[in-house]
Length: 343
Image (tube, rainbow, N blue to C red; front, side, top):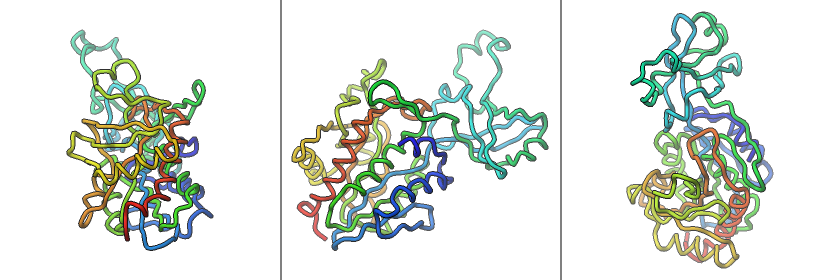
């Protein structure tokens, strides 16, 4: 989890994360391939039943869009950011000559008018300061238009089994997928797919599912925990430490509505092996399962998620015990799939 969280890779620029995944699955699968979109497709050969476990490996971040004459950079968000989260963060610019460090700034409150101080500062009004004094200096550092930018934050252990870091959405899902594939003794042919560009439109899931055309799919993800101040208004009961969350529906049904067959598969597996689980019905947000289950003539798809606090911030928090139980559930579900799906 630490290796994955500390790796950097915004949508469309996931190669650093992909290297970690390939190393972690080397020796546990029969084939590892990279498709035209950049998805990592890992195949564990078995019988005619094809099962897909998909986890997106991209993280939200930014991309340089302008460098002014004084050496300050303007960026555009890649993925969904709440602007208040972005201000005053330290960032890494992944330039041609290596990593360049910078900070995100804006006009200080000392120079703001009273009405300005009451407004949320938008990302378009922020800039990145890399310490340069001119545009030429920035270019000399290897930073240019299109350079990816990620948050400079490291994985840290909190109390007990709780941890915090960046990009738990969705490196936790990637860790779950890796662990499940290593653990499972399924007779089916397993396709472990680390997808690209989920945060900007579920793109890698759409193309990889089309190519694999599995008989069923599990998406491994994170979901919004509602066990902290301010989350009560969501009227959801998803907590850290209570096990994986199985999605019933997300995005108020505009994304995935899991079929009864899929829910029976996942829930009965959890109950058979004594794995505590939670059910999730969400109004906002969706996952790769939305793209996968609509591929070709339709693919039965479910989502197993790790409850996570403060999603889409650099300080996401989860409980490693939930991640362990989630991985176990997916591993066992792959073993019981033949009772629910036929090749």
